Picture 1 (cartoon, rainbow, N blue to C red):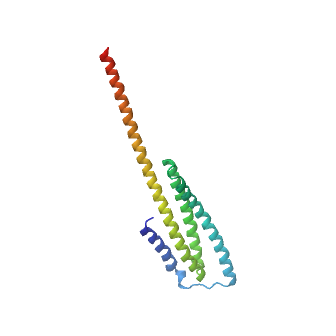
Picture 2: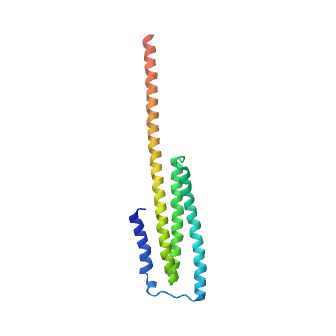
Picture 3: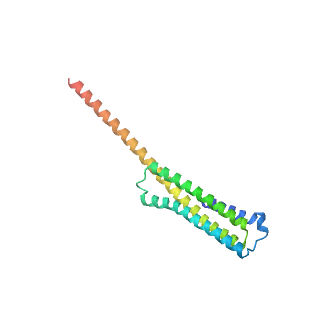
Length: 172
């Protein structure tokens, strides 16, 4: 995701936070409401990092074995990162929905914090997907060069065998 795209994503979340009808009046949670909010928030806050950690695992694998991964492995890794990121994004969107519905001072502050976090995560995903694209391109280029070299060596091998056949015919 480009810097411009990240700004758009951030603006969309900020717009959704600020433009909803519920934003007209911020609720003040009573003690029981605050306890329920904290309990629910804690569940979401545990779920988001778990999912993000799975995404980061692929980032680590990419960094550790970038030169040894085949084109097919890179394609699989890219697909897995996109799937996990989509899952993470879905969980994030649900969490933001919860915070919007809660519409309290605490939830507004949490939305601001989570929006900063998601922007950083979006950037990390974009950087790693770009890196995978570069690796895929280099694997394709290397594969093309190998194919050309192989074709040339087969051609030169057949030229040599044709030349030796002609020599044998001429000497007979």
